[in-house]
Structures are given as C-alpha cells and as structure tokens.
Image (cartoon, rainbow, N blue to C red; front, side, top):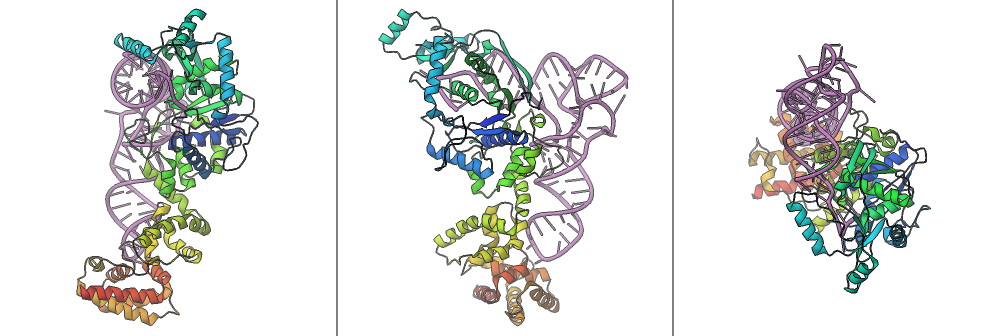
Length: 506
RNA sequence: GCCGCAUUCGUCUAGAGGCCCAGGACACCGCCCUCUCAAGGCGGAGAUCAUCGGUUCGAAUCCGAUAUGCGGUACCA
C-alpha cells in the first residue's frame, strides 16, 4: 500500500461541487491530492462538478477557488477563473461544459445495452422501496424496465412519461485494493440495483460524470473521502463499461464532529472562509489539516507546505476518522504567526486591525489611521501574543482610538483603593514628565517608575497595573514600558490626566 | 434493515512480535520566568492499546468472534 503501483505519471484531482462554500474537509482532500502529486512529480487537476444546477452558484464556485488558492494549493490543470484562461489539455474542466460528452457516452452505453431507459415513476419507486423495507431487504431497483420492448417503450412515451437512463449493475463481486484500506470486496447485490445515470430531464448524475471525467482526464489516482468507499464498486463497473483503465483508489478517513459523526455545518464550523475571517493563517491551516489523519513520524509537529510536499505519502494516512480539534489548530496557528517575518505579519494583520477600527469609527470614536511604520513598531509587542490575526485589535486598538474611555471601576488595582490609585497615578505622571519626550524609551521609563514604587512602599505591580489600565483601558496588554514608549510622551501624560480626572470625579 | 469501514491518553498521533506495565503534541494542573497577558522552560496527572478468545516462550502489534461507532444505501455531490 502507499507506493504508487502504476508507472504512468501520476494524475490526481480535487473535484469540488459548488453547492456550498469550500468545506474544510474538501480543503483537506485537496491538500492530500496536491501533496501526493507534488511528492511524486505528478499532476494536480481541479475540476468543478457543477451538474447540480439547482444548488450550484457562481458565488460558491468563487469561494472554493479563492479558498484553495489562499491555501497555496495551486492546480496544474483547471478551468478558467478570474479572467485567467483554462490550463491543461483535458478541458473543459467544468462539468456543465462537458454535457455533450456525457450524452455521447450515455448513447453509447444504450447502444451496447449496458444501459437502458427506465419509465418508472417516483411513486412506483417509493412503493417498491417501502415494500422492500417491510420485507427487511436492502432497497434496490427491481428492474421493472430492464427489458422493455420497443412497443412498451412507445406506450410509456405516449403517456407522456420521460425516462431516466439506468446503467446495468449485473451480478458478481467487485473487488479492489484501496491504497489506504487494503482489499475491499462488495457484492453487486448491495449496490441498489441498476443505477440511474441520467435524469429524466436529460442531465447526468454524479456517479456517471465522475467516472467519465476521471477516465477522460486520465486520472491514475482517486484520493477522496471515505464516504465514497461504498460507491466505488459502482464507479469501477462504470470504468469497465467504458473500456477505461480503472484508477487506483485511496479513501481518506473522515473529519469528525466532537461526537464523532461526519463533520457537519450543524455541529462544527466547516466553511474555510470562516477560518480565514477569524484570522487563521494558511501555514497553520495547511499544517493542521495535513496532520489530521496523517503523521510523518508522530513527533514532529510543524510542517510547511513545501516540507509536506517532500514528505507526504498515502502509506501513513490513517484508517480511522479524526475529530476536528480547534484548540490544536489555534496552537499551530500561533506557532506559524510567531514565525512570520515582521513585514509579513504587518501585511496580514492590517486588514484585521482595520476592521476593528472601522467598528470604533462606526461607534462615533475618533480613530487614528495606523501607518505601516506604526504597525512595524508593534510587531515585537504582539507577535507572540496572537493566537489568531483577529486578536490584533484587542491588543493594540487603544493606540489608535483618540479619546479612550476607560471604565473607572477597572482603574483601581485589586490591592489598592481609589485614593491610593489617584495618588499613584499623580505621582507616576510627575515621574514620567521628568523622563521627558527626548528620553522616551522603554529602558528610560522603567527605572524611575520602579524607584517611585519603592520610595512609596507600593508593590511595583500595583502601580504598573494602575498605569496600564489608565493608558490602555485593559488589564491584559503587551509589556507596559514598551507600550508607553509606543504610545508616546504627550498621549501618555494626557491619558494619565484623564484617568485622574475620572477617579477624582467618581 | 442491508452492505461496507473503523476502534492506542479528553483530542491529534508514535508504535509494523520482545527496545512499550506504551512515546510525543494539544488541552488540563503545578512550578520557574515575570509589571499584566502571552510566549518560553521544567514537572504532573491522563490509555488495563474497545471486549473476549486464539496463535506464540512472548502481542498494542498476527488470526477469529463480539461490541460500539461511523459511512453508504437518491432522478445530491
């Protein structure tokens, strides 16, 4: 298992359906396909399966493409997007543009009697199913239309019935060697009878189009979720009927909700875009997703996309499902944020800060626009304190809000009373005024404040906490002296004054 | 119901017959560092390897059964 058995260059794909935003599970499947292709010098193809016209939207399509691109999973072949032309010799890569091909194949199967028209109504099928259920049988198509004469068909047509096309499943056992699961055998009697491959409105169904396209696009490896394992025999039968080479299959373990059911929107956050919006970085997400169901050694934890491209293989993919653990994702995310260059961090964090400031602006507060220089100066203060990029606001917004309103109750440190706090802030103000604007640096600010605390017999921590709240409005902030330095001399004094007034007034 | 797949600390995992009375990471607890919050360092607790039976001198690792969970069973993908 694991090592590719075919000698032809590897071709694998991700084939998302634009019936919803990019799902975290789809992203992982895409990642594994991408890594497998990279590792073995193969080709990674993107194909859009948009035959469910009722549920597919261009917005979802865009979301999926954006998400994959954001993760860095660039495809070698795929449809045209955003004005860029389609790439690859096997196009079109959008199924709705491949309809003639499907129709042609359906005709061929019909002509070879490998498929047939079925005129059964939904009601008839439903009652079949009910009867089978009552008899404790597996639901299956009974084959009522499997051998209609031309006359019978004319009758149904005359009655206005429009047929579906069914593929003959036949009898026997279908076996295959899954690259992850090993040998799998399924009796065709468990497949539900002859399979509908074309709807009565003429549109092709998923099981039909995937196989046609995987064959036509010369896929060598089908790496997909375990939920397709039971469907694989249908696909194999179809490949054979088409006279195509059956590719290798690798069925990935499912990503699970906390209760171990298949990860769903209902119980988990599944949309990739939500994770992006919450400030997760691509490096963290890629790393986390790669380790969900795969482990190179189980001891190393941090891997970049490039590193993974050199390490990944199917033989270390797990068989059991994996519960999605957001805490672990956040930890990995923090690890990668800490590894970003200052410039890179600034660029990534800027939109999140901007969004936060927009909220303050909307609330009628005066906001100072952060410049890149401002942000660069903040990097050392925030880099190791960001679990996600979105946390930048709570760490730094006090710098950009002009008239900071501090909750008076917060101003008094736990061990102090209001009077002591007022004295403390007043003394601190004088001390800092003496430091002066020219010497306004963290190393210059700290000693005199410590001396002050010592002289008055205060615990330094209490004094510092009072100052911290006075200038930031928060009890948890980056280190105080660096914060004062960044805030600047005049604003520091102004905020201390404002805090003293608030205390005196209250 | 029927068919299939899975099962190592709460979670992600290492482990491919003796190195394992099971190792790492997240989370949790404690200590150190410390102006708060983080980050970091150190330590702790946490898994009778689902259960039962078999093979073997020896099993988490091989075989079988059972249980539990999950997936599939559409004119969804």
